[in-house]
Length: 136
Image 1 (cartoon, rainbow, N blue to C red):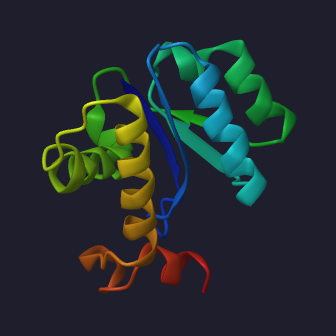
Image 2 (cartoon, rainbow, N blue to C red):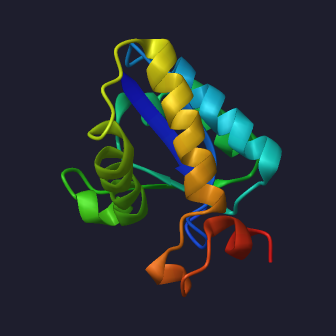
């Protein structure tokens, strides 16, 4: 399964996420559109994956007047906020649960992202939740 998330860099708030069993751009576009329903950033940063460089994905950003920022090839630290989120999700949720079905995985991730946004304190946010910082 493939997971995509759109986060606000300032607050670490997960604006949206989607899960797919293919690497097609559709689930990334769904996550982007859901995030844009929440807010419209000035800049949108991604890696250079085919989903994010596709015309269908970039057109949405350009049509909204959003500048596109893409990480350098092989430079995971350029996208450190999402990389940190992936590490956290894996160690605090995925590795601790024995998901047997996509339904279980989707349900578990939904619960986890609710926890992550509303209850999990972040040292980098002065021990506040992403929700507290995002909606100040």
